[in-house]
Image 1 (cartoon, one colour):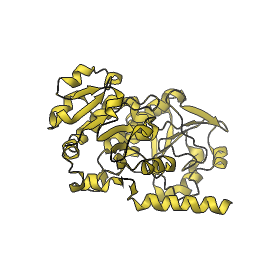
Image 2 (spheres, one colour):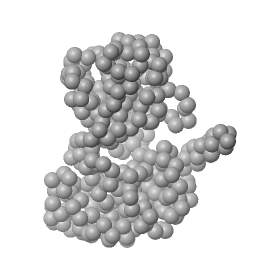
Image 3 (cartoon, helix red, strand yellow):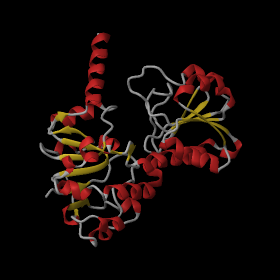
Length: 329
């Protein structure tokens, strides 16, 4: 049997957790679960709320000695150098976008199971968190915009779960919404002057070197318009985008307000944690029983095993970065 330790995320204002206390009874091997002291405090839950379900509360050092360490945002962890060969990391990694993190996980001979790669029947099991990203981003951004959705004409880029969440809030609050898919990028640039707000929910292909909205397109937008970049890829779909924080969420470029917070589900952390827990309760016993390799969802989401990179997509991306850097020299 393996122990599973749950860390509080070190990312700024990250209040999401992996599971809520009332979801723990759905896990059989609760005695194998260890939660960092104060784990649920950000959501209003005491350590006792977790302890009463038969799990353990432990200091940081003990959590980091567990066989499996779970963290919602591994990329912002400040403790990775304390892990050792043979341990497993379990959470959001975004290895394709973060070469330095991936290289460190490989150097330390860790095994990594990524939440972003946990798919069942073609859909990420945490699809609800993607919806919440769109919902929370729209709600938060409009409080900073100073206008209400029903006053605005909005262009929405994308047709996935994130855009579905954004559309739910926009339409529910009376915005005039026009949806653009991936084949309509040129049309959006042509129509850009019509909109008060542009919401980008496109999952950006890191192999692309172009943009959907270029800086020069900002000149064609309405004065005082806003871009809500939920996908928040730096200089990705939106050339002028750079990730922001919940504490400092917006900035202006050429008179256009940019909102690019990169973890908006944390704004609705209780709902997001419940969505995580609903899915994770189906996998924690498998992890504890050392059966991850027998489960298709977990095995396909294992991108690194004992320091060996398994995901060819990540390997190819690293090769392209190396080639590009060599060409620049």
